[in-house]
Length: 485
Image (tube, rainbow, N blue to C red; front, side, top):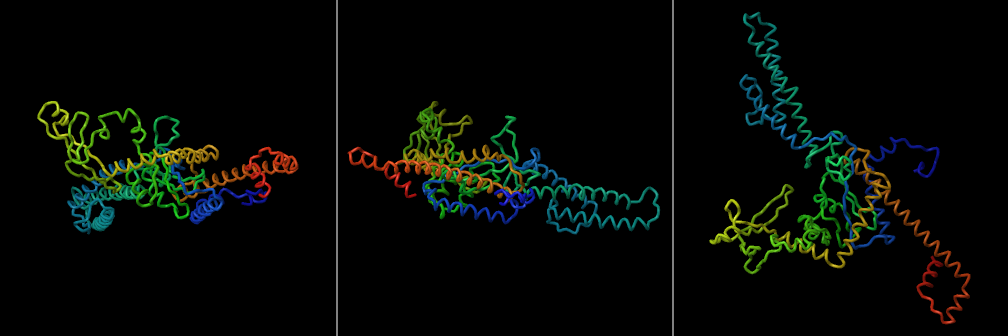
C-alpha cells in the first residue's frame, strides 16, 4: 500500500505479492472484503432487490498447452494393466510363491501388488542363501533358473506394474468428477475457449469463472472446474448470501436453463428464474410453431390423455418411465404409444421402419417449467429485466479482459486461482466505483457553478416570478439542492 500511494523508499518484490495472493488467510480476507463492499453499496443505495445477473467465462490457466490427461485414456490403459497383473498373479501361484495374501483379495489392487513384491524379495533372498552353499550341478542349477524367473517377475511388478498402478490411482484422485486435468496444474480442466486463433476448436487448460452482478458491480464470484455453465448454477447460488442481497429474479442466459436449475431456483430459493432454455428462441419462430411434425404442435386431449399427430395417428397413454442421469437427477416421463391400425396408410405412419409401434416420451414437469419460463420472459416486467442482462455481465467481462488485460492466470491451484480472481474482480469494482464518483463530482460541480450564477442574478429571477413568467419548479429545486448539498 505504501508503494501504491507513491512512497519511493518502499518497492515490494514479486515474492511479497505472490505470497499474499497465494496465502490461505487471503481467502478469508477476500470473502470479508466482498461482504463489506456489498454492504457499502447497499448503504449508498446502489443496489436494489429487483434482480441479480449471472454469467460465466473461461480463463486460461497457467498450465502447458499439451499437458492434458484424459479420463477415458487412463481407464483404457488401466484396464490393460489390470489384465497383466491378473496374469502375473497366476504365474506367481504356478511358481509356488508364498504371497501371504488372502484368497479373496483382488490381484489388481495396489496392496496386492506391494505384497507380491515383498513375497518375491523374500523368496529371492532365500534362493541367494541356498545358491551360495550349493555345489556345481551339471546341466545348470534349478535354483538359479527359479531365481532368474522370479527376478524377472519382480522387475515387472516393482518397476512397471506397481508404479503405473500408483500413477493411475493418483490420476483418479485428481480427476474427481472431471474428464481431464493438466499435468502442470492438476486443478485445471481442458475446455473449449472463445479465443481460438487456430480455428480448430482446440481444448486448452482453464477455469470457468462465474459472476453475479448488479449495476455492473461483481457482487459474488465462484471458480469452477466444469466446462459447462449448466452444472455450475446450483453450487453458485448456494454460495450466495441472499439475506444480505435479497432479489426477486435470477437472470441468466440459455446455457443455464435445465430442469434441476429451474426447480432449485423456484422451490429452494423462492425466486423467479428469468433463464431461457436451449430451444426457447427456436420455439418462438414462426417456422417452428407451424411445423406440425413437432410434438408441441400436436393436438392434445386432456380428458382422455392422448395426442394426435399431423397424420391423424392417435398416441394413447401407455405408462411411465424414469431416467436418472449421471448427476443423480431423476426425470419422470409419460410414455404414449401409437394405436394399432389395419389400413395400410395409417399402419405405415403408426409404426417405425422396424415394424414397432411409435412412441413419444413427455416430461410433464419439464413442460410445465418451460411454460412458466415462457410466461415470465414474455411479460412486460420480465422483458425489461431480461433486456438488462447484456448490459450487466458482458461489460464486466469486457472490462476484465480488455481494459485490465487479464486473460490468463499467473498462479496454479484452485485456491490460489480463487484468490487471484477475487483480487482482480474487486480491482475492477473499485475502478468502476471511482469513475462513478468522479462523474458525480463533475456533475455536482457543474450544478454548483450554475447555482452561483443564478445567485448573483436573484433580482432577475424575482422579476421573472413577479412579472408572471413561468419558471419550472423542478429547476429551482435542483438549484436549492446544489446550494444545500
